[in-house]
Length: 76
Image (cartoon, rainbow, N blue to C red; front, top):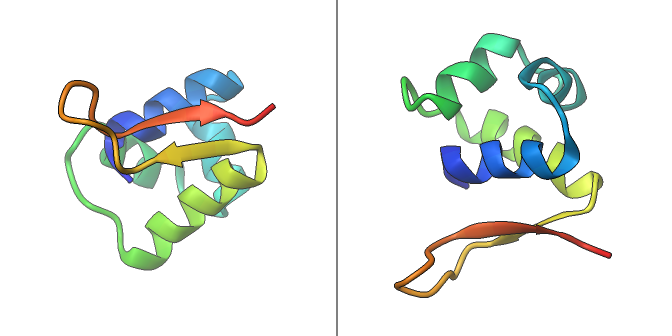
């Protein structure tokens, strides 16, 4: 998962960084620093972020093509 995927997923869900942090049981600074590229969270924290977003029906497109790259969509 990339910082831009996290931001895009939150946008699809209309979640703030604080909301994602609460749902992933992490600090808001962990989300903020990750999305700004300041640091890479531990694998456990990345897993928690991704799991919280997937639970809300976000699907990660990790194998994006060369033109678009990785992305996210909201499952219907």
